[in-house]
Amino acid sequence: MEKEAPAHPDRESRLAADAPDTGPGQVLGAEDLGAFLGRTPRLAVAFSGGCDSACLLAAAREAGCHVRAYRVDTPFQPAFERDDAARAAAALGVPLVTIPLDMLGRADVCANGPDRCYRCKGVIFDAIRAQVEADAAAGLWDGAPAFGDPMPDDVRQAAPGPAADAQAPSGIPLADGTNASDDPARRPGFRALAERGVVSPLRRAGLAKAQVRALGARLARDGAAGEDPAALLADKPSFPCLAAFVPAGEPITADALARAARTRGL
Picture 1: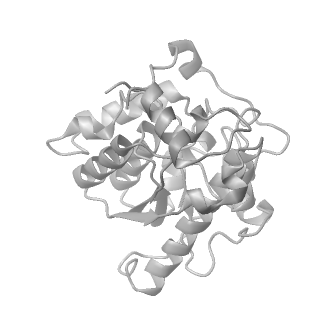
Picture 2: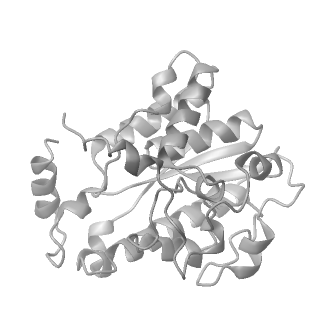
Picture 3: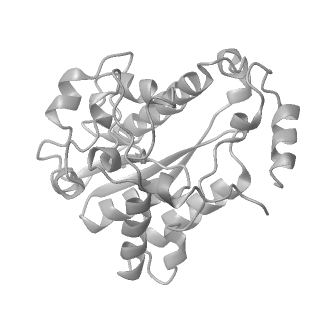
């Protein structure tokens, strides 16, 4: 099965500067990863099944956080992402919640306009936040201390948008695997993260993609994934969602996604 070729090493080592509208949760180099995890007893992680979010999950476990992983299941994601996510979560002993989303039923997303990524990310993170709150109401987060100040002050005070109070009512921060090599000037989805108060601890720690891979490999060597160190996906190539391979402006349909999958050898 062919996957996206690994990025050039130089690209994975570079740091992408903040854009004017970068959200406070994504400010480059704002806070050490250990400092954030050390005062964050509970953490919900949006888990794509990729290297970055797997590393974040492992680091949170190592720091003693009560962490739960949340992923969405849409036609935009190839099956191997689902399988990789399940493998990583199982190896780490982290509960994984899968949320089915009818993304093909979202006309605003499937119009495939210039803001597709922004709209899609908004749908995804709204669904994950709703599930985190439902799980909290059902007592699934019980047993973890709620002490400390888990959301950085600058994130809490500055995050605008439809779901800016990312802690309410559960008090549980929602994080993703955005790293310091991800360029906000080229990724409209950054705006959706900012509007929803999502925290990107790897980017805030100034960790480039290459450093995230190195951290994941170190955690694997240290036994974070038990007898399945490869489950931490430290060497996994980056792979955009299938919608990224549908030409801009062409409507996203099941047939268009199937064609995109075939062109990628999936």
